[in-house]
Length: 262
View 1: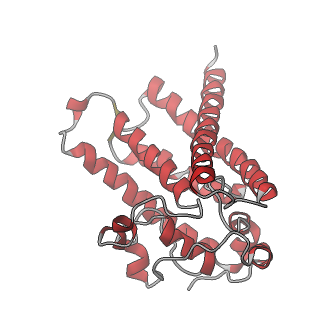
View 2 (view 1 turned 30 degrees about the vertical axis):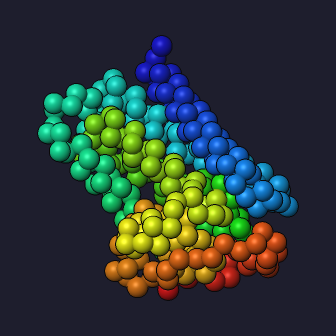
């Protein structure tokens, strides 16, 4: 097989992996929602179909560069991913996970704030905010422009920061789980996590729900550090009954009302 063919096959394989990972994770948490909160997604069938459609398109945008880099790592040693634990001290393994999460969180915060400027919001980010209320299927429901801003982060970091392949797998797992659980419309973590001292620094659904309600606040992904430093942390949100205000909020998101940096 030619190099171009091998790279294309790797990109296709990674796209399928990202797509299946999304379907399994979001589907699993949607099923958990059905068991824990029956009727929470009642009347949202059309919205969830849109979320799945946008998300599968995003899977290709995430998967193609990941597949190209995966091929380069395995065949050309392009990246700083390592597979032998002894290459770096064991204490570096958890540190690398934290570095990746902090870097990803920083990139997300600032690109997310930028997308709340009126023009980027109307062009791209309104697709994500059309999920009112968000569901477990909304984690990757992005316009292609927004998907591109998210797809470059991890591929860029593997060229800059050394990481064990197992640590990278953990980063991707955290990214998937937090992305889905923050959009489910209910809080999966116990109160001592989201409302206690730990929740003062970590983002869960209660914090991200406020962003989907008020738009101009709570822009972070994993940590509340940037929101606190920049004065955009408005605390925890509420989980309304499923029928309250849905139509007006959907129209607001579609028009782009409420966009703009706080």
